[in-house]
Image (cartoon, rainbow, N blue to C red; front, side, top):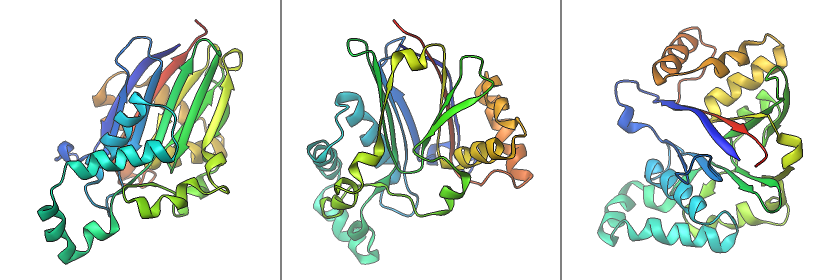
Length: 248
């Protein structure tokens, strides 16, 4: 079972939270059995809409494969009429399409497993039951990986092979046994705070534990503001989700 302890997001521009291109949602139950986080790529077409579509598609169907992606792409395409794309063609936006990360968690009580799907640079951290040690991070394991161009989920079918090639597809799935996770804390983060987190783990300064003390959106906002001013946190949409895992 997955219980939501904390969720908040701070936009790149705090004066315009409506521009936030991160999106998180769960199946609405408590405890939840599935949830997902997505971060739309700012340089692409309608990243906020695409991030939302990916999250909702995951909540409807956690089997992320070619068929799943095609259904998400068709749903996005249906939201925009042809004239919209024709106008955007003048600046090449529709030609590029949309891109976003996807980090999805699905708990299977019968199989007693947690399925993690991670495409892109949104990161899951698994903390031990004492919340004093980081057992694993996925899909990134070092802060340096955030300097690389991430593999993102595309909205145009012609880019699908980049995600579902034989060399790549197996890399974005992680299966954990319930017994391994009982009592553990699960932390979901978009790239800016994910990079900050892994840097803290690498430097062994213990600052990453500050995230576990967040209780209100204002607390995260204050934290993000101070870390940005100190140039320790990149200015970007920043989303933090803290979950507790227990065997049902």
